[in-house]
Amino acid sequence: MDFVILSLILLAIGIYGLLTKRHLLKVFVSVELIATAATLNFVMLTPALSKGLGEAFLILAFATDTCVSAVILGLLVVVQRKYGTSDIGELVKSEQSKEQEEAEA
Amino acid sequence: MIFEVLSVGLVISACLAIFLDEAVYSVAALANTFVFIALLYVFADALFVAIFQFAVGAGTLAILFLSGEMLSEKPAKKPQRKNLFTIIAAGAILSLPTIFFSISGSTSAVSSVSFEEALWNLRAVDVVLQGLVMMAVALGIAIVLHERRKGAR
Image (tube, rainbow over all chains, first blue to last red; front, side, top):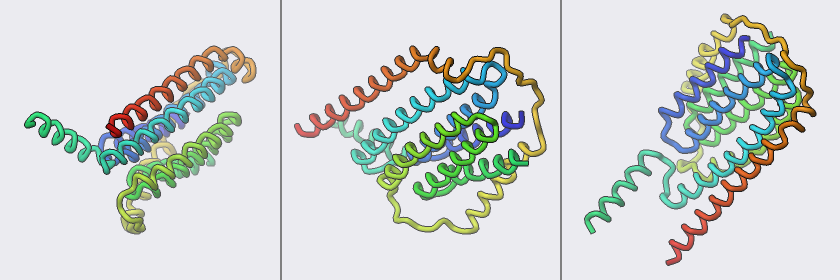
C-alpha cells in the first residue's frame, strides 16, 4: 500500500500550492492535484470493497470533475477579461478600491 | 520497481506543475502528471479508470492550455535551468518516502460486483450528477448574460 504515501505527498504538494500561489490558474492546478490524490486513493483502495463498484463511482466522478473544471476555467477567463488580472491579491485590491470609491461618492 | 519509477516521475511532475512560473509550462507538467497517474492505474489493473483518466485528462488539458494562454500576462520566457534543477531535485527528495516506506494492509475483495453491474446500479447517481452539471451550466450562462446586460446599460 505504498500508494497511500504517494497520495499523501501529492495532497501535500496540492495544499502547498493552494496556500502559496496567487495566480488563479496555479490555484486551479493545485486543486486538480488534490483531486488526483483523492482519486488515486480511491482507485487503489476499492479492491478492498468491490472493484467494479469503485471503478463505476470513479468514472462518474471523472465526468463531473471535468464539467466543473470547464465551468471554473470559463469563470477564470471572465474574471481576467473583467479585471485585467489573474492575481488574487490584485483582484482583492481592485475590489477594495472600488468599494472605497463608492463609499466616498 | 515500476511503481517506484512511476511515483518518482509523478511527484517530480507535480512539483513542476506547482513551482514553474509560466502558466503554459505548468499545464504541460500537469499533463505529465496525468500520464503518470494513468500508467499507475494500468499497472494497478484498473484499465477502465486508466482509459478514462487519459480521455478526461486530454479534454481538461486542452481547455487548460487555451485558458493558460489567455490568462498568462508575461511574454513567454524559458524557465531558468538552475531553478528547474532545484525543483526536480526537490521532487525527487519528496518522492523518497514512497520508495522506502510502505503501509501494510489487506485488500481482499468483500463483494464481487462486476463493472457493468455497478454502472447499471449507479444509473440514478449518474442522472442526479448530470442534473447538477446542467444546473451549474445554466447558472453560469445566466450570470454571463446578466453581466453583459449590466455592461450594455
